[in-house]
Length: 479
Image (cartoon, rainbow, N blue to C red; front, side, top):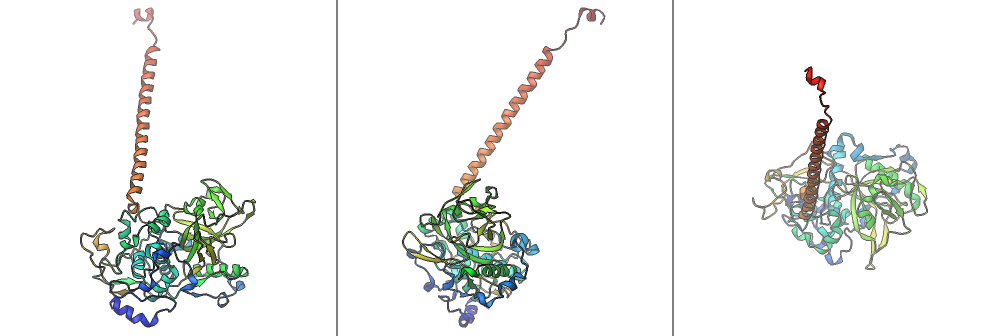
């Protein structure tokens, strides 16, 4: 079955809350779904309720029933998933493209397949497939809930079909991921994205699907405990879920993840973080400190080992948090991960409750909540479209043989992001300069050491010669 036949077969199954048509052939036909860059203020459009059905807390087991499940106090799939942990996706690297919505979704879908047992390898799903085939605003952001709807209808391909070469090997795109809030607004990186299809479509490729995604958030503060237990149970049973939140300046650098600052690496929105100290202000979550919105994968939960300071009054409490996987490489934060304080410890920058935020422009954004997914079906082998104008001279991240067939990595490497060869030339030159300084410093130390050792040896030899006892006359006579 080829892709056109496959998508035509699905036309009667399309979820009506999702706009646009399935891709037809090599070029996706989602013009009705694209968001004009002029209207893009946020990096991601995070109104999940607009494109997914809600999960009503009344339809799931009650609080007392969920408490009887005896969920662990601390759990995350990367550390506590046993054999399956090694097959999970690592921290991604979106570089300067505002593709967090696509990276997070790809990782979540793949991880849910691993945990469901439909695969026994790392799926390595393609961010580029989503950017090219289910476009939205591409590098200027998108709604991951809408994307997950599309994946539930049609599916998502792996990096064996199409990978991030177009960005990783382009000097305009392959910069430091934390700079994307600014760069993705100023540059038209979306023009670099290839058309919908595979680099080498001569063989069939796999499409991975999920069940229809559901959004969930706290509607009433009295439901907070019930909400937490429902999400924890879902994560433990099916796999990671998607969260969307507002990013402020104190989050971007990741200094809050330092466990030596007495906050146990937990992000509290009103914290002012330095390398070894945390102070607090009354209200940091202002429009002036707002940088953009962000989508990530929630892989587990926990709570602080002891009471920690939560405000500028010195109040101390045990703080519950979500364990999250970011898309800013594994050099950011805690090996690419971070701990987000749960609502109500964070009221604005959090995943648990939908909030309305007013930006500098005066526009209001409705942001927050989670999207829950399940994987049940095994990936399906499909003849996918060919990206046009791919030749032997096209520069790619991998050898051509990588793209001609599915690469099922059974060894796994869950904690590593793409290697440093994806960095920008600027980053490379800075790294080389630092290495040169380090080597130069070591050489100087060695030279100084040799000089001091030589001087010491000469000094000892002279001392021995000067202190050598002279022979007496008697000793000379009787010799």
